[in-house]
Length: 275
Picture 1 (cartoon, rainbow, N blue to C red):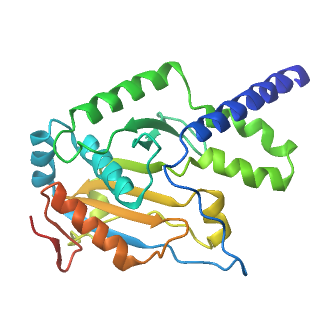
Picture 2 (picture 1 turned 120 degrees about the vertical axis):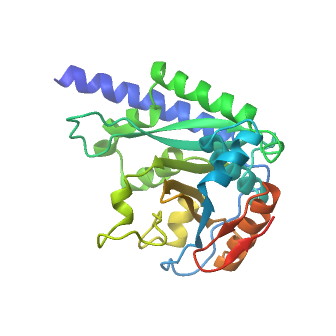
């Protein structure tokens, strides 16, 4: 058992070094802001949720040569470009969670991440390259598992100070945006009291997050989407280092992005963008 554990630790060290190098290679185009001075208080991250008619979503994806999944990834990459989460070469790293749970699988976490490098410049007019890159990344993952899981054997062995730095390696670089597509959901989720709700959405939450945490994790930009009751919902969460972060600013970025993709969305009670 000791020999087996030692082998795992060795692999983890190699993976950590490789991921750290990859993170440096994908460094953002701009200089990383210094953490602000003062107390490390809890903060509220800007969030928003939009709803798009499912038929309109599918039609737009098809018109651009993509799928619903590629359209979400393209929207994520476009937003990342708008807020400056791009590498020096202009590309964006789109992280896509993939469910690996099988029948009878009792693991606490059966989700892995697949990284897709996307050029955000053409995505509002053509999603064919995004679609091909997603397909390639999913196929590659079958032969090359997510290295981040290989870091787990290091957790009991490293001091807290080093662990904080490792978090930034695991969560992705400042050029990463999360694009999580849940697909078509069970219609039952839209009927909490036995009748259909007008709107249903799920959100990503970061309870108790502080400014220091955001600087350790290189900020955040995450899109979570699913389909139910004839609508596609997209929930967004964002925080950019060294910038004014607000719900108003996030909603403006979303509105501009929807216009660029010629999509109409609502928040459930009023129109966000007519295009």
